[in-house]
Each structure stands twice: as C-alpha cells, then as structure tokens.
Length: 64
Image 1 (tube, rainbow, N blue to C red):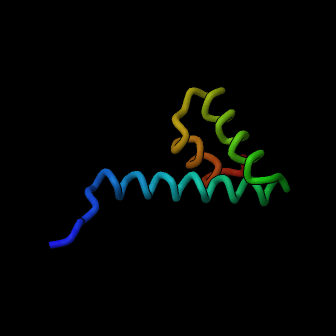
Image 2: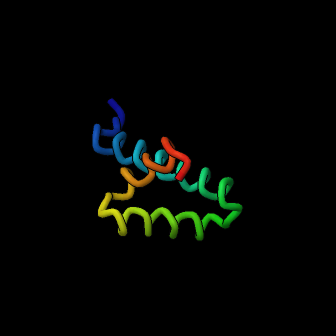
C-alpha cells in the first residue's frame, strides 16, 4: 500500500487548476503578466466578497 492522496488533496488540486485556468484566461484577454492577472483575480474576489475559486469560476464562465 502506497500513499494515496485524500479527497482534500484532490480538491485542493482541482481548485488550484481552476485558478490557474482563470489566470491564463485573464492574461490572454487583457494581455497582462501572470502577476497582474493573479492580482486582478484577487481584486475581483475581494471586491465582490467571493473566495478565489468562485472568482475564478466567474472569469472562466463569463467575458469578465
């Protein structure tokens, strides 16, 4: 028996993946750096009182 990641680890990986996709989309849409895109995503989350994953979902599913 080897180490098997638990559900929490899988969930964290999925959340990181969603955030990374949103950052990439913002980079492409806005022609900005990765740091700028992450900052923009953080600002969206903060201004609308979302957590980062929810803000990423909005970016992915809309033309934010």
